[in-house]
Image 1 (cartoon, one colour):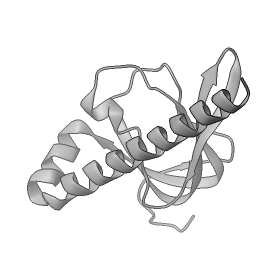
Image 2: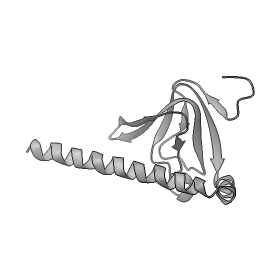
Image 3: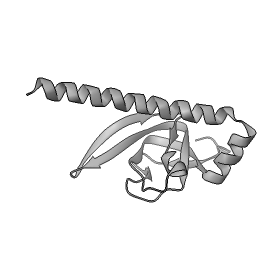
Length: 127
């Protein structure tokens, strides 16, 4: 990473956050890629691979629930950490930021709906 880059550097395979941990901040991926992983019955399942510009862990800003997934660096990653206070300050400065966050969350909900429909369809075909 270039000298003077903002954010924290994560090495390949390093977790930015872990499923089940408390969270009070989100991440904005600046460089590199991260994998979003959930565990179920001791098995890890990859939900997504996300790159620069992606917002990760935003649910921790809005809910007081443990992290719902692990986010792991794929290669070297540079990520900014944003807490609720700073996010709200930035939204007050630029309200379009709130619209972009809503668009991101809406897109993820749509993707989840499509995945559930595919899973239901596959389950129905196998019975």
